[in-house]
Length: 441
Ligand code: ADP
Ligand code: ASP
Ligand code: MG
Image (cartoon, rainbow, N blue to C red; front, top):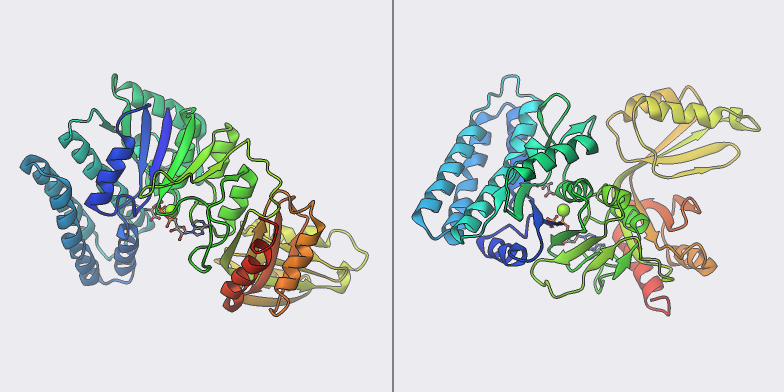
């Protein structure tokens, strides 16, 4: 069994959906995970914002804005009138549903139900196309098997339910399902957070003991720097699970941050491929990717807040850090970077919903300074800890910038640097010139 996942652009037009069908039909058995048509989830988020703001008229207008795009998509994708009728009926049902909510008491449960509609639409359109083409495929609803508790996948439950669902379709070896969406412990529709279809694919891969998980997107693999901000980046052939996890966590948008975990548990390779350029090698993330290349890639994450806690009570004392960490634990806020000196500790967070309460509690322990609008730039490569020149080259490359924190040695494959967000693009470009224009790669 293989698991393929196609992102928003890959299903974003009739032409691209037809390309997807060329890639999935035939060969080994597959479970194919689809995202929503590109732009749809953003629009659904906008509709929910309008409901929350009490503006039903705006919500209805945003729903109507879908019409021209989906009319065109359906007309170009499906040729038979009966399948076009089915697709149009589906869309009318969805438009009616999306307009049916009341601004009074609009809740997060309803919000999640709305967010789920994009994947429900794209998978149904794909299935209608495959049926029209005479392909023997089955649409399996993710809401029937993808189960979470406190936001975590319930692997045993998913494995059992998925096996039951697959067993209902004897003789079928192509299954289409929704990425991103799931049901939670309250049997409500929920999701795996933005970009979560990658995570769905990896969870399914682990639960179906897949031979490989393939993430098909609009670029030919994980590049050695962020192609949105740096010119001349190129695809990395091979990454270890830990390297890929660090890059995804620290901002490489090509992968949802948690994608690597389920695949790693079962030693399943994850291959990143370009839907529009399937002949390109792409990137393999897997157990056999130990290479001596010191720097594999560079990524950056925005929206970081740095907090410094200074206290004379820290001097020669134990228990201080424990008290600091306890506050972050109380507010379920993960810490990304941390550096300490004898009299102060600096750390960073990117989950800021409880920031004011955290700061109030920290002030009980000492003086607190806060810097917002920071970015973590992260240089990743399994071999970098063994090459003592890299850390000095990284700091030299950035010496014109206001570096706020440096973290090195926490893991064997990562140097993290905290800088103001306004310097992020410059930092990525400076590191690119320094690390990739010499004999390192
Ligand atoms: P999908 O809709 O297929 O899930 P995403 O937009 O989520 O696609 O991810 C693909 C995008 O990730 C690319 O178009 C690229 O702009 C961006 N990206 C950011 N960092 C990297 C990187 N290091 N390598 C490749 N792509 C990256
Ligand atoms: N459609 C969802 C999003 O836009 C999930 C995904 O594309 O992975 O975030
Ligand atoms: Mg994505």
